[in-house]
Length: 354
Image 1 (tube, rainbow, N blue to C red):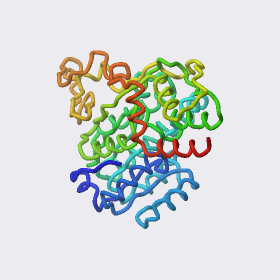
Image 2 (cartoon, rainbow, N blue to C red):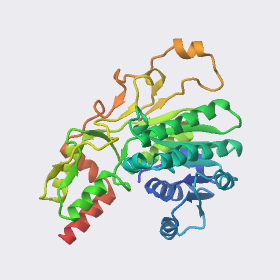
Image 3 (tube, helix red, strand yellow):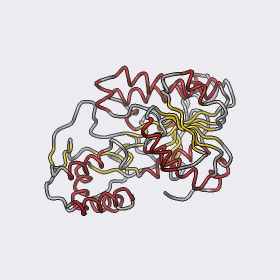
Image 4 (cartoon, helix red, strand yellow):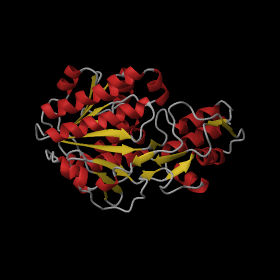
């Protein structure tokens, strides 16, 4: 899963970490790293799915792992769960674009109000730091999922500005995480198992590609380096959906081809991680970009906010998008896919079944 630097290890050792929505792909991956490399005092998982909690408990089999079956929509239980915690990773969310479109009020309750409950409880209980996990769909949002995550970001920034306690509030923003639950790669694998063509919306649609380990690296980097209201973005390559599907076909030696079905409601042709408007607040930090809040700290001098800008990066004037990020060709996508253990396992299982 990659190496963890000493600064992160020393920050986490002996500490208690709460992960909301922690039975998902991110929660499992970061828990594995925490246990293997960082020696935390305890990892607390707050989620709604008791079956996934049972499976995760069996997987790690550790007395340091604690589960709370609860929903972030319930402020009282969130406030109870967060007591005695040092750090929070807020990953709980409704993430499926179609479901959020069909049931928008549910996305509001989980992504906005649930996010507020977690962030506000962190402040009230004076934990050290909270990192909220956001998405490229929150940037220039056109769907309910993106709109609700964008508001979650704004809640984090607004509460960080109030500075009611010692708690540092910051966030991360990333694109498609490869081979996570509900993402396109497992969908392609399922279609191959059904002997059906790989269905794509538009072959020229572009998306950022990020292995799961990089999303974990990003969150841990933000935990150590983030200031109040910061949002961190990891530099990631992008690819067309058509090339991604072609790479899967070549890796799996699959003969049913590709079927283009058209863009669904709530989908963009291209994604953005940093907007044009955020450029003046964005700092290039090597592997990462740091987006500072519009008005840092308690400084509410709107004259400075509106009339004083700054330079500090070489980003294109349209921001950081899946059209101007490093573009992978089919061969490079295959190489990236083969760096993911789950993909190699899928390939081996598929060959056995063929």
